[in-house]
Image 1: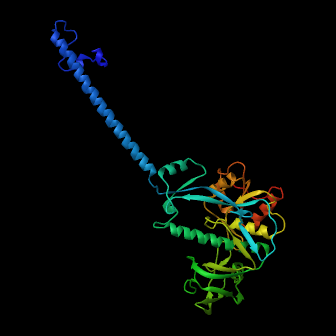
Image 2 (image 1 turned 90 degrees about the vertical axis):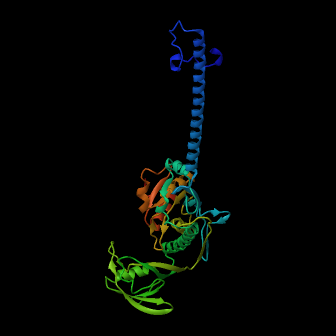
Image 3 (image 1 turned 90 degrees about the horizontal axis):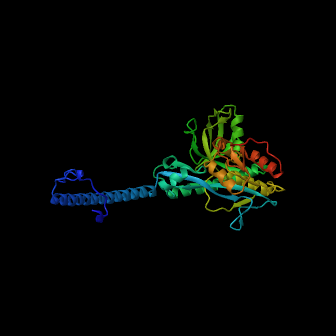
Length: 393
C-alpha cells in the first residue's frame, strides 16, 4: 500500500491476516489482509502520536516545575565581591574623611576599604539558580541563612544593626588613630554585659558608668586595663555612677589566658575628642571598615603621603587600643580589591588562614594584628620597599 506513505507491515503481526506462504488464498483474503494491515498501522500511529503528546506534555510540565524550582527563593545567603572606597579620596564629590580642629596634610594614593554584597533573606532573596551559579564561582560563598541570622530577623533589624556597627567603627577608628598618634582624648566607659566567668554580676549593672579604679580616674579602656593588671589579682575598687548616684564597689578579678587580670565585663563607651572627624559614606554598613578609616585619619594628620601614591586596600575591625579584629567575607574582599586595582592588601591576622589558595594573582596580602603594624606596611609600600610582614595565601 505504497500510497499511504507507511512502510510495509508484517502480516504476521496483524490478527486475521493470511500467511504469506498460502498460495491458495483467495483474492478476497488478500484484500482483507491489506486492509487489516492498514487499520493496525493507523491504530499504532495514533497511539504513537498520543504517547508523543503525553511525553511532550510531561516534559513541558517537568521543565516548568524545574524552572519554578530554580526561580523560587532559597534558604541561602550569597556573599560576593562588592565595591571599594578610597578613604583618603572622595565619595560623590565629597571627601570620605574630613578633619576639623587640627592641622591636616595632603595625601596621595589609595587606601581602599572593601565591601561584600550580601544577597538573601531577610534583606532580599536568592533563587536556587543564583545558588547554583555561586557554587561554581570561586569568589562567592553560599551560606545557610540560619547560620547568619536567627529565625525571625527582619530587614529593618539587620539594617539598624549594620548602621550602628558602622557608627561604632567610625568612633573607634578615630580613637585608635589618636591613640596611635599620641593625641589625648577622653573615653567614658559603661557596663554593657558580663562574661560567664565574671563575678561582678551581682555588683555591677548594665549602664553603670565607670569613673575610677582604685582611686585613679578612668579616662579610657587602656587606663582601666592598666589598673586591673596592677591589682595583682586583688579585688579592684571601682567608682561608678548609677542612676545619677556615685558609689564604690569592690569587684573581684580573675586571670585571663594571656596572664592579664580581668573583671569579665563587656564595656560600651562614649568619646570626647579634641578634634572633629566626619566620615561621609552612604549605604555601607558593618564594623569591618574600622582599620581603613583609622589609617585614613592617621594619613590626614601626619606630614607626607603615607601611601606614597600606591594603591592599597584592606579590611578589619578596630578597637580604640589599635587591635585589628577578624571580619567576614575575606575572600570576597580580596577579590574585590584586586578587581578594583589594588596591589597590596591588609588582612586581619585572624583571617589569614581562610585565604589559603584563594588569593588572586596580582595582589599581595599582608597579615596585621594592630594598627601600628598596618601603618608600617603602608609606609613601607609607600616608600617603594617590600614590607617585612607575614603574608597570607
